[in-house]
Length: 94
Image (cartoon, rainbow, N blue to C red; front, side, top):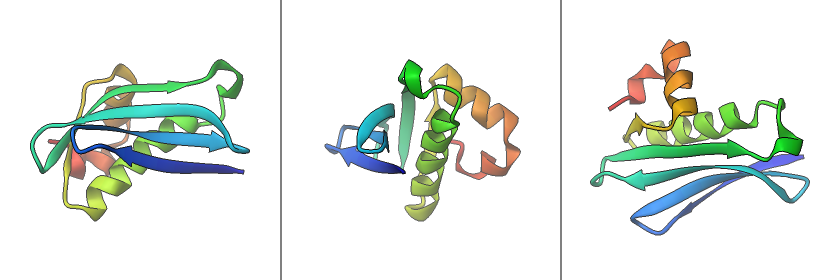
């Protein structure tokens, strides 16, 4: 069973994906003002590779942005490629 949780201290935060209560990966972000955040890193532990967790983390960020009327600046190479490939999430691009 997987779950994704969001942590946020007001300046920086991360979305963490858990696989059977074990941390499997994270996507870190930094706030750029009150209406935008920068995805600066997406990483999944090697043993959890190939399960689509990096994509799930980016999509969790997209969902959060949509729910809170926010925009995303994808600086991390993985997030940037995800936005380039999937035009259905372009609405949250800053």
